Image (tube, rainbow, N blue to C red; front, side, top):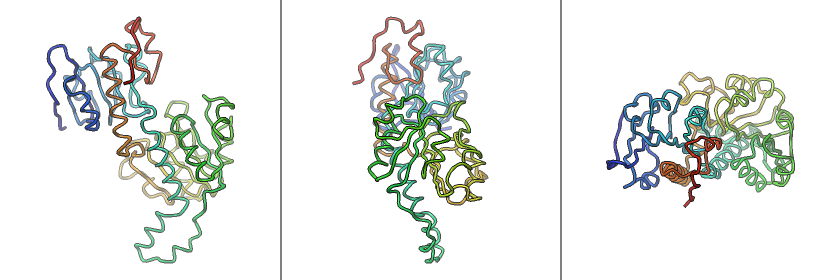
Length: 343
């Protein structure tokens, strides 16, 4: 475990602990404002000594469980560089009045473009064509797996900021866009130029391509499993840039091997990093990436800066808008506190 400390806080200054360093642009915002301890280890339980006087914990790659929260007596805020927070015990943090900062909007374009790239690669059979050409098989050009995206129906699960960006990109490609989001009204979804579905399983059946942009919760775990995959068109593709566990991995492998669906693109995994014996590595018609959809150069900077700014605001006793659970501000510690400027 490699560790380093950036700067040394004077008495009364803040201390930030990071599981892994954020981008240099984010780190610069802390110069002269806080001592920074970077553990380069995903589990703060392994450096609870550093958590004893930590004001902020930034979880870039790692986790924060109940034990960490309850054994960090000065902890005021937990930061996540992204919008997913299934690796943080938000319930316990909220009960202690500790906001969990997230960065909505910082990676919308990056994730949406990544999903689109997977769609294009699969629809043009690029991975298979590259592999076969390198093996000397010029005749792969006659595989007849390639198809055009224009006119096809893409079903988007989750029309939050990323899903809406995805809808715009797909519309720009001449695709018909359908959407499911239980938190949005029919009127809101249709105002986006998106065909409304009240039942996600009906959306799966109607779509030529499906792309997932929802969080992992107990309600969404294994949302798409054997039964749902079997209901999809045999020519359909499915992309998951949301969270691992939303698609049942074993069932997806079987669906790809049996030809139940035509292909898939997966950026997120039930266990990260996946173990070498993960059956996904042997599945056909599948593109994998290492949970990197949000990690464009531009997005990494935006996420780091937004997360650090939010954590600094909370440490100053100011409410920050972008949190996993807004009810945290009902805690007595936040009574009478002012909202932070987002500058």
